[in-house]
Length: 461
Image 1 (tube, helix red, strand yellow):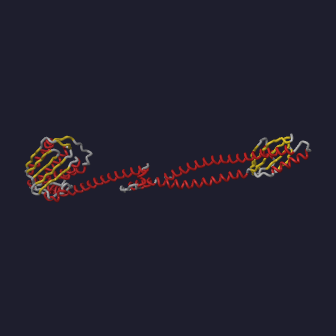
Image 2 (cartoon, one colour; image 1 turned 45 degrees about the horizontal axis):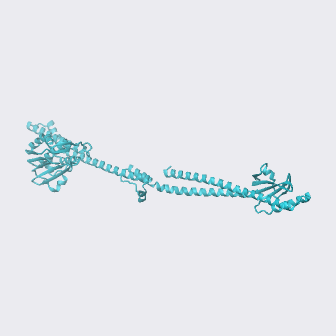
Image 3 (tube, helix red, strand yellow; image 1 turned 30 degrees about the horizontal axis):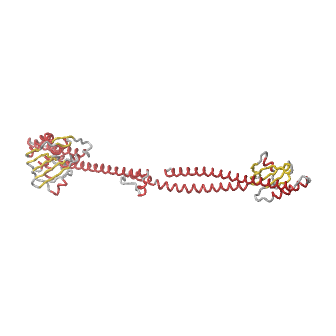
C-alpha cells in the first residue's frame, strides 16, 4: 500500500473514531435529557392534576353525601380533568384494589410493580407510568398516570439514524479531501521516486521539480526533495568527471597503441633480420643500436603515458618545501646527458628561492622542458628560479603563435616528422601541464619563431 493511501486511511480512521465517539456521547446525553424531560413533564402534570382534583373535591363535597353518590361525583370530577389534558397522558383512579376510572386501557399495577414510576416496553410501545396517593374525604385514593413515550423514543432513533447518515457522509467527504490533500502534499515524494528511478536508469540529469509554493513552505518533504537535487547535482558532476577521465584515458591508451606501432614494427623487423639474415658486423651493430634506441624510446613513451594516466587531481600529491638549488642538483646529471647529446649549453640561475612542491614531479617537468628545448634545436638553455616562478628559456626554433594553445594536448607535435625521428611522442608539455594543475600552478608558454621559447611554471604560493 502506498504511503499516501496509508496516511489517508489513518486520518480517516482517526477522524471516524473521534466523530463516532463524540457523536455517541452527545446522542446518549441528548436521549437521556429528552426522556428525562418528558418524564418530568409527566410527573409535573400528575402533580398538578392531583392538586387541582383534591382541591375541587374538598370544596364541593361533604361527608354527609352518601357513599355511592360521593364516588360517582368523584369519578365525574376526575374524568373531567383526565379527559381535558392535551399531553396525551391517560389516568387511572383507584381506591384500594377497586378501580374507579381508567381511560388508559392498561393495568398500571403491572407496569409499575412496586415502583412509584417506571418505563417499560408494552406490546412494542414505550410506556411511562407513575402513581401518587391523595386523601379525599378522609379516604386514600391512588391516581395513576400512563403516558405513551413511543414517539419520544422514535424521535431519538430517528436522530440516531440522521447522525449515522451525516457521519457516513462526513467520513466520505473527509476521506476524499484527506486523500486529495495527502496526494498533493506527498506529490514531491512521487517525483522523488521517479527521479531516483531515472538516475538508476542512467538519466543523471533528472531533478525533482520544486514549485514556488513548495520552496515557500519548505517542509520536510521539500527539504528532502531539495537535498535529492543537490545529491543529483553532485552525482552528475562526479559521473561527468569520471566519464571525462575514462574518455581521456581511453584516448591516451589508444594513442599509445598507435604510437607504438612504428617502433615495434621496426624492432620486429630488425630482430627478424638478426635472427634469419646473414649480416656483416657493422650491420649487426647498426641493427642492435637501432633496437636499443627504439626500445629506449618505447620505455620513455610508456613511462610518460603511465604518468599521464595515473596522475589524479592532487589526491596523492604531498607538497613539501623544496629549494630551487635542490631541484637543480637532482636534475643536473640527467640534463647534462640530454644537453651533451644535442651539443647544448645549460645555465642555472637561482637566489635561494623555495617552492611548495613535489620534488620528483617538478624535476620531471624540468627534464621534459629541457628535452623539448634540445629537440627544438636550442644551443643555449637557461633554467632559472625567481620568487614563485620556475622557467626554462632556450634559443631554439620557437613555436608558431597559432599552435601555442595546442602544444599541451597529448600527442600534439608541431613538427611530426622531426619529433618522431627524435623519439618524442608529444607528451612532454601535456605532462608538464598536468603536473602544474596538480600543484595549482600555471604553465605559461611564451615563444617567438626562430628566436626561442620560455616556459614558466608560476606557483600560487
